[in-house]
Image (cartoon, rainbow, N blue to C red):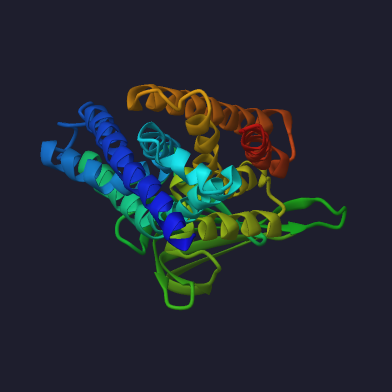
Length: 359
């Protein structure tokens, strides 16, 4: 039975990798075409566009992996069904559930592959691609467009206007708020620095520093050439604060959600991104199992093209439901766990019912 499980899983894995290769090439082509609109802006050229496209391949592969798993399982198991190999397997007393579990084993391996792509390779390469594109297009790099970024760190609100190196920033403003006698928050101090550098231990070294402390009836002003301060904001965290949640690893999303909660900030959209990332990854296993009822049922005698069309339709419907819930959940204030796990629960129910109905 272990030999049979490995044989079935190998068929699913092989065809999934083939399908994913095709889908990734198509996705890379669309990314490269989309990059053409930025070619010629600043020093961003055609070679840069090709390099950025290549750097984004792992992210594209990670996002397409669940759909590729479904189509690959449909094609791989479907070829076995057309060759009557699955008929022989059933005649030998192997249950449909056992075939589904073998397909799920392939899904677990694909889940591990997705973990490597989404947690190890894609995030740093995506960030590097963003850096290359931004520095190529603009002389002055800003994390969040013209307005810079804003980060809350305890009772301090930090505004950073631009980045000039990996850990060097310019145009930094720090607003310190305190609770007054009436219990309301009010501005206690305002500071600025022409340049800021993150040093070891997550501290900051500020150049040309000036601050104004607001007292009850006076304002105290001071100017310093340099000043070292402690802070919990690192360059890695600043990157988390501004990049797309889809390009972050799970650990990065988790850290940022904890930071938002600790500072009393709204974290719903980031929680949805966190739990949706986990549920979509686990859906790879379910989608591999979902292919089993099709190859034993209506698609047993169908060609590979028909199975691919069915797989694409099912995958598109699943991800449309997923994306719709994610977007509407933030608008209507739905529970992040419900928004993230409802599509996966529905997929699991449909898969279980479909496998149970196979004779």
